[in-house]
Length: 255
Image (cartoon, rainbow, N blue to C red; front, side, top):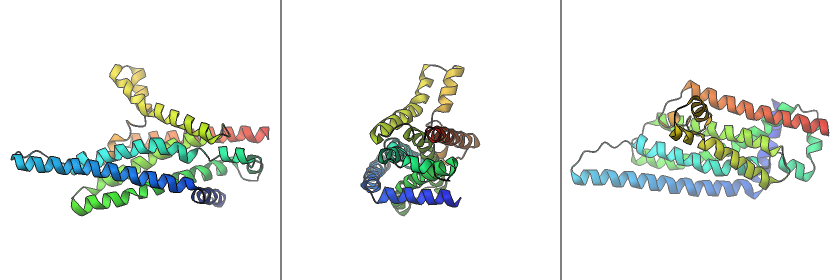
């Protein structure tokens, strides 16, 4: 465990001594703030119009603000996550330090978990910014805290899943731009798999819908933590890290 944490701290340090972390934090803060303002302003306007018209339309802050906000945050992550994972192993290859890393007395699993954990913590640092946005919702509204907590868990699990596959992709190339492009393409594929439901409800389409990362986020945004969704994300994380370990093992043998 100590070796995993040592690698994790090393990677986190490399994020923050370079412009990567600060650029990602700035982009995420701007976009999340914009989405929070737009969705909240639309909700407030709809509520005001309902009162002025004398029609008592049901207004639900959790369903009309919090759930859409988490959906938009997940979309932001779709673009930023490949930028977090692209450098994990590709940078080691580019600098020529990958041989030193894989011939060290560290176990492959320790290296993989340390680098993946650093990427998850980096993504978690982005999500911390959301606390500022939600503080305004709690200050001026009365939302239920359960969908907020479960939404954070869902977005973090979704990001950890994509980061696991992004870590694997980073072992396949020394070019960070290529790693980011392939990582985004894979994330986009996993994102749009649930679109196949519009073509029918065959067993194949049901499987593709289950493999979509989007279909497992809905319950989290509603404040429900479903066991099948947890199993899906944990299984996908395990698959991504397993592929990464096997790819790193092949690099070790070639070295």
